[in-house]
Image: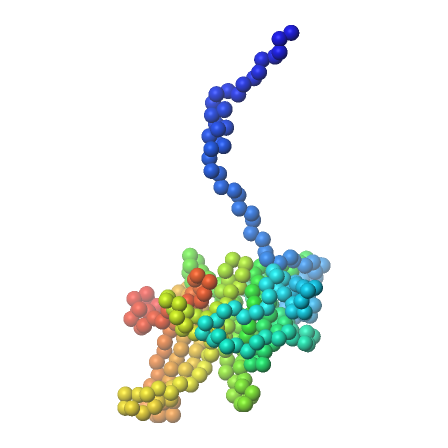
Length: 296
């Protein structure tokens, strides 16, 4: 008996198969996943007033080969490069971990959590900082980073800046720095971290050419002495505030010249801060430029 005839593919189907094989079909990208594993919390919803224990389990990864804790994504607790302040005091692992969680409720069902695992002799604390989403069953990290900021009187704030098409998200830590020589004279400082993908990134503020405009630790009040047109030194006080609106993130600086003089002069300088190319970027706008944009 002759063998059954071979059923060859139809010509149009064979051509289609060859065409599909020849196409450079890009692979389907994997879904974006949070950087750290969630932890189950049972039926009771977690709140910012909870004890530090669940936050430690969520944000920290224990490394058997090291005495220093790591962030839950494996990042070590260390300072990012800061060309504007190269000589920061070194960080050491905190000995007392009984009260090291700083948490604050944020918008959109997010909580900002900072675990202070390290300290330094200049009054700073450092450790993993995260945006955490809580539901009735689990805590989930949506973004993670490393924060170094003054430990005294610290607070965390989430800011959204820009319009819907250019919106950027920032985490701002504000605290007090008090010198050992004059502990009663403290200055407020802010640290700004930008949300990029699933990472909170902090840096110094640079201009378009990469030059330093502000260090990563931004003082909110300071004093300067400048030579005036009359040849005399003039004392100037600067006070700063950080705000966000539909135009962006702004660092407003009010400068008062000769504050003890009855005819004192003051003016306000505004610097818009954005995040681009892995750094915070700053741009000082003149009143003319603000008028051109229609901004106040």
